[in-house]
Image 1 (cartoon, rainbow, N blue to C red):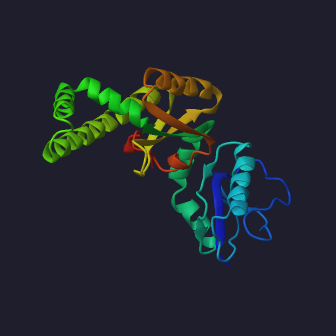
Image 2: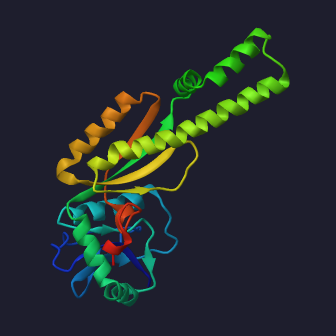
Image 3: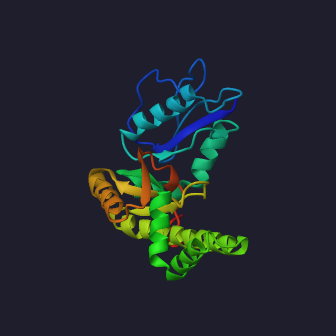
Length: 249
């Protein structure tokens, strides 16, 4: 039977509630595998596991319960090993790395920030900043819309200006929020977002980070922000882009 892994903790981590259930229907009993100074929170992995709401919530509930007791390296939903021996083998092999990460993430949570543009506001902004755009738009207006070539040229210039503004605003977002975070990890590009960044934040000073988000909203009203958190620090189990490689093991 394969082994489902919820997260990694120190072997001295407080015990989980007796009889706690995890993923699966019926819920598989959650247990702990210890190896030296480390422990893995696991259960049997049900066959054909899919990211259904019930199982996603079960995974999150185990992590929330475990995280309340101390530092935790959360695994993403669907992390499955061939068996218990494989899990303890990885704990032994990567013990130094996992112990370093547990120390780095102790007391920390993750906030994911996604940014997009208010379409009308950003168009108004790029037109205001670019005299060539304004001149061509006005020339087309006076010519009753302009020729097909002129309209095409204007459209291409607008797209290029918006794309440049997207790149600039993604950098603005990171510069504004990184000082309020311990680390940042840029997520994969996704349609509709000009930035997708996760921030590692001290749990006790999360209000400082959220205040920085509010200030960014006020100072850049053409940027729409969506904040998700606090979350287990999924994006920081491995060293993130803002963390020097030499500090990780």
